[in-house]
Length: 396
Ligand SMILES: Cc1cc2nc3c(=O)[nH]c(=O)nc-3n(C[C@H](O)[C@H](O)[C@H](O)COP(=O)(O)OP(=O)(O)OC[C@H]3O[C@@H](n4cnc5c(N)ncnc54)[C@H](O)[C@@H]3O)c2cc1C
Image 1 (tube, protein in one colour):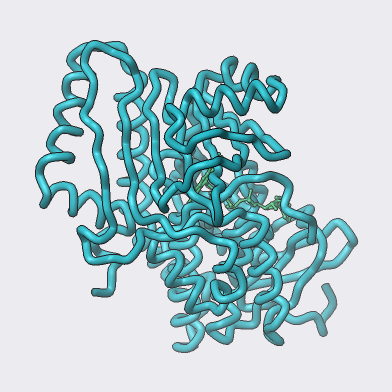
Image 2 (cartoon, helix red, strand yellow; image 1 turned 180 degrees about the vertical axis):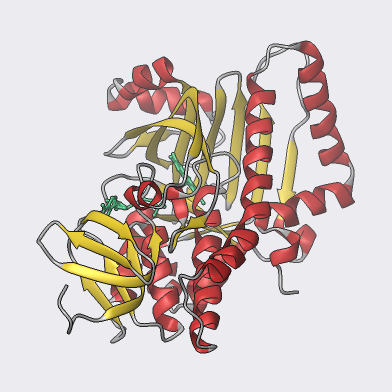
């Protein structure tokens, strides 16, 4: 950096869905923003079930109109006990019209979402893109100094670390995380099928984890199949015909004949929680801040709430003449995110453990809980509303 180099109000490191959304939301506030992220085609075939508030945010940021054609509405969520155990839970159905909504949200393939985010990010004159990566991140008193792979030297008052699970920004800020390996993996692939999904997402609970069929446009679904790590590797190695058969069997043929599409990925599952969400002029968003297994579609939905909160808080600070990377501003972000993320991490962990447990009293408790959810309307409606976004985050 030389004396003429600008000091950005905020600089986002990492161009996954959380980073791009944060950069757009910050630019939208008028902040002088930089995005340091390699432009590369999205690498896997994952899809995201975006719940209501996430869709509202993407709508507000003028991203959703560019990709909603690629998304399928999620109107009903079915939870089916497929453990084959002595004590089984009753089926629970969550219907969006029960809480006055046309849909809970939409399922979209991440590639389409990323194309829309990239297109929107390119429109801001106050958002400078560096197609590069951060090699050093050095938080100092008045700003953070960043060196890039191509030899650029940048500085910003606030760095937003959206650089994923290994997060160099988190390390630079000295933020520790606790990580627990779940010894489970998720196999992801997409299928075409002969019967309509009717906008119903169905989650089969197996003794190794959930296997969920989530609607995509047309007679297609994305599949996230969680199992023991070795079983996921076995499924991954099957030929297309064998995997199609296995998926049809696992879905109990509710979707008719199943044909797997090209492209599969396996993700090792962990739960990761940070000690702090921000420190030393660095705020964390997305998977640099929290990693959860794909249960209840919470991961990126939390990441988008991180993006909205840091943009609101930093944007307000800048408009009041405050330093967006100051300890006071970072403390506001910390307090905005802590309860939301902590409560979801606990709920997901408990749901996963209760499914895997061979302990009979735990299975009874799980069955009783599901029975209550299925039969007691107010509780079911509360669970639906809390699943979409925490109560204290909703405007109406
Ligand atoms: C099987 C599966 C299914 C899922 N389904 C859902 C779902 O239905 N709903 C939901 O809400 N969530 C879901 N999730 C979670 C969701 O996929 C993640 O939360 C999300 O992809 C994380 O996005 P991110 O932007 O935080 O991280 P990433 O996508 O990992 O992006 C991080 C980026 O930072 C870049 N980077 C790293 N280091 C540097 C550096 N030094 N300089 C510059 N850039 C750097 C990386 O190259 C990468 O592009 C699922 C997850 C899995 C595994």
